[in-house]
Image (cartoon, rainbow, N blue to C red; front, side):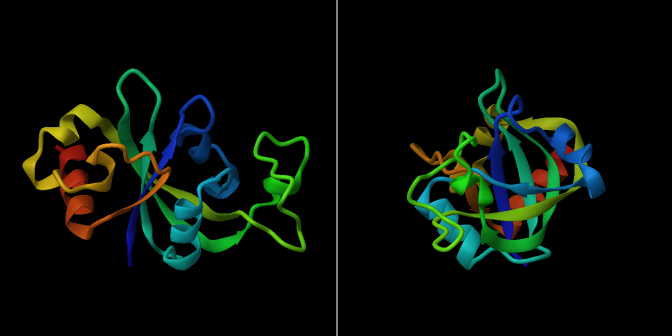
Length: 154
């Protein structure tokens, strides 16, 4: 099993939105970065656990967990000209972009803020905390995952 952090702007798609989806499951579309796509394609597997991170808000924070329930497959929004994620170079015959399906697992009783994460020495190497790290799909070590879960459950 691997661990991940998926970033989403809460006004675009929030943990609450995932909770309210049928079967509390939704595809994670709109990834338009090759490194993030490759992580989903090459490393994400069914059963992997995911931190759900709300970015671009007053206090960015990890707000809950989800799990991967379907491995990478073509992102149909990339060939839909009405989608904000449309890419004219992608097509059903030659898909350029991928998505995975994730299912709601838990909502934290309190968000674990970016500021709080930065204050923990054991997390100093976490991808999220590295300067310039903007990927919306990031690996998380098992140790980081367990430490953050413990923080969220304090």
